[in-house]
Length: 283
Ligand code: A2P
Image (cartoon, rainbow, N blue to C red; front, side, top):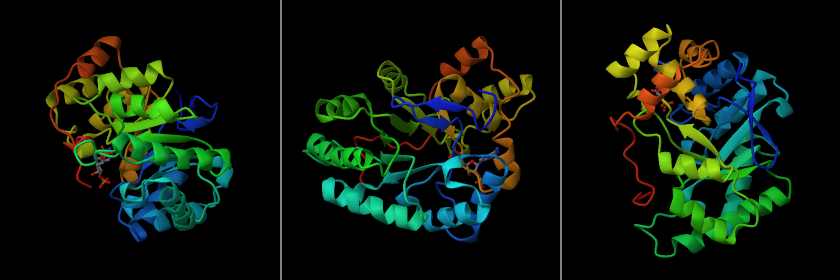
């Protein structure tokens, strides 16, 4: 990858720009509008949204105000957990499109699997929701469909009834938490892994090992983490509402992490993250 507009290719042939601008926790209103516009101005062409972030109207506004052509932008959103099931998911999709003021999405994801710890019928629930994703895909309302926070057993279960291949799995992915089993499974099955919280929501930034490695390349820890995702074939989605950081997070194409440093980072033990277990979530 050499620039923000270089792409990964999904298993249906759709191309997806290699860094997504993350919008989780970007405050709705001026903050989300201004930072979204800034990201587009700086060259980001992939925006990662979700209904539950409660800022889709602002992100939609940023897209309009940026003046960018719709076809030059890759927009993802996610179906929230309250709307699992066929009819509910289709209705939720329409609300998201309306909020974003768009007439199609590039990628639509199931935000979380039905939690095993909470729902007995988690497999059936996920299967029903996936049927809605397939309908949206077949009707041309979305260019690609996938899931988020699905572990291997969720993916395997969904595969039993899916008629359309899962194209993406967006998971928590940062040093100390690279979810090797899920990553390996996705690679074997041609599912692109996207990395949410590639900076561990900031928890990576003070780590001494990462600081030392980043220093070798004259880069920040944030840039190291983002580059590390890409070199692991995981598409990073760094979030920032700060213009200087939005720029910094895009400047990761002028260095290459050595095999040895990749190994060191890949082997790091867990040292912080969201702590969320997809089988145990209560939301
Ligand atoms: P802010 O949005 O206020 O700029 P993640 O993408 O892992 O969820 O991390 C997001 C968090 O990390 C946010 O708090 C964001 O702050 C902060 N952040 C994003 N980019 C950088 C950076 N380059 N340097 C330091 N902090 C950053």
